[in-house]
Image (cartoon, rainbow, N blue to C red; front, top):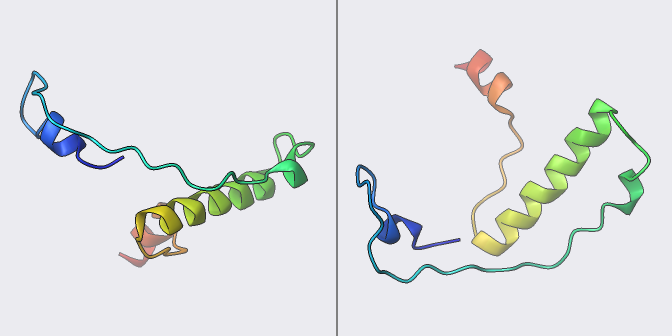
Length: 74
């Protein structure tokens, strides 16, 4: 989604009329992980796939660093 900052700018309580854009990317195939249940490694792999798909659609660079590790490197 883009343009949401124009619909509800930071600090405002009420939204204002403005256009926002929703972009849909290709579906992410997660069938490989459907029987993984609560496996932490599978959850991490699924998260990585989803973030990479978002990066492709948004044009942002994928940075494979998790918040906990970034805080440690601080």
